[in-house]
Length: 154
Image (cartoon, rainbow, N blue to C red; front, side, top):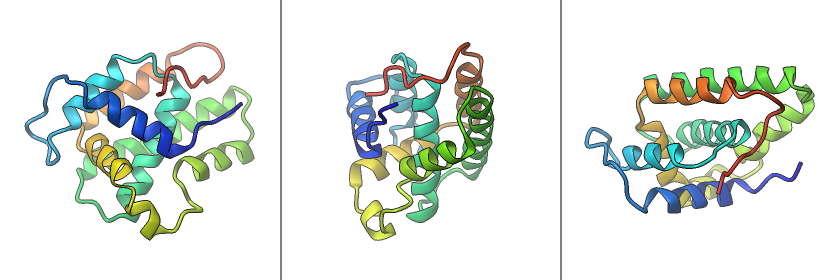
């Protein structure tokens, strides 16, 4: 399976999110509503959602973002649930851990990761979403039959 680099995933979704959509006036960045709308309008697959989840959690943690902790907790639950589904679908634990390292850019220096303005902006928007949105999206991804797929992620 060929995996797009995290930056391409996040930039692609950031570009999608700037094309319009409902504005969430309660979020600090003002873009979480746009991101939710953009994600809902794509044919995103569970692997794409897992990549977004991992990237958002890692960027929020490593870049000391001021985000909704209830949403971060729900994102952590989502990552665990998706990981279980992927293992049940045939991924090895080593493959899952490698995927998480790559999507969370574990090998990138924190300073360099936090300097990626587009990625940080996107992570802020996702982390500014409601925990209910994260849970509902995760449930939709978990309900998909068959092996985990990227779907339309960019």
